[in-house]
Image 1 (cartoon, protein in one colour):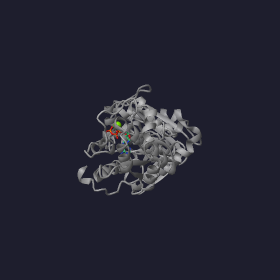
Image 2 (cartoon, rainbow, N blue to C red):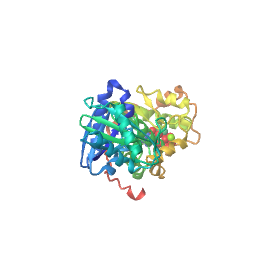
Image 3 (cartoon, rainbow, N blue to C red):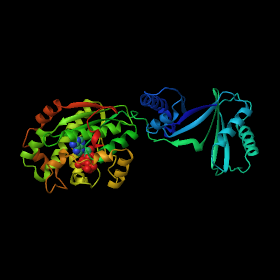
Image 4 (cartoon, rainbow, N blue to C red):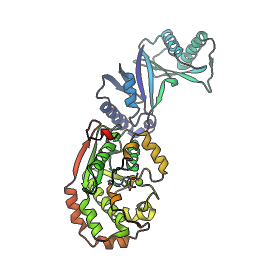
Length: 396
Ligand code: ATP
Ligand code: MG
């Protein structure tokens, strides 16, 4: 009997029209993630099967692939004789702890001479004969034994051998989005949640040297590196934001400093998104968290862009966001103390209900359009992978 991994798609299978696209994207994503393993993979409309001598390490990788809902260790026998199925079922169940069970058979191989009800009955009877204290419970069993009869063999597994997958949709199924990635807690979590819905991400990061340090930039690279657990690589477009920030500051934006700065960020992000085929912007704004994230602020800031802005954590409490950040291992990096470009120019009393007219009046005072095109011309793009060395190791 051969031990193998069976992958269940779950949510995917409900999207009938797109099923093939879903399965092919998931298949490609799994192949990327398993590039360092020796294995064989097969896919069909309901499952994928992986054979390998490194099952445990492979399962570890698969628990971070979006689109997988269940990972089952299954046993396959090519000998489909009913006596073989009975014996194999018994030897699998002998290793497990349970007191009540049921047997469910799926006969995809319609040429098999015994129908599924009868197979379940015969195997169940055999198990009862061989276990002294175990009982059948069809309504609420502690263990369900599944017998999957397919043309290529019989697959036997139990729900006790199932590991929960991470769920969601395969990354890339929705195309690309541009994540505004800062060094904070919220934006990496937003990137993770967007990827979970099938969006492949590129990132934009605004830096303001010498007001922000190289460590601040390395921190952002580190965060992207953590997000590479779920994809093979992530591009970061690093925007030199100093000149624009200084221009806003010089033109006395005072309490409007952050509002204007964020309007500039949105303008630049929109252009970067359009230049890189990203359909939406994604950011870590959360309603009410800071002055620039009141509904009034969001409205005035959002006014400069015409592409959708996805805010995955908009309605989450900070503690809920922190829980996810810890789960995806970005939290420890996010709380490293390097200054972000927003905090440096933070006014004492930032406006919480900015007016569009006031923004337009301040923006008239300097030629921000030429500054923006100059800035976009000076963007540096970094490709981050799991193996990138950004000298932050000692800090993590
Ligand atoms: P924190 O977790 O401390 O709130 P944050 O990253 O959410 O940090 P905010 O000032 O709340 O910081 O900014 C709101 C959002 O704007 C961020 O989640 C991020 O998407 C975007 N943003 C802020 N600063 C930058 C930056 N320097 N580069 C790119 N995006 C940024
Ligand atoms: Mg925030």
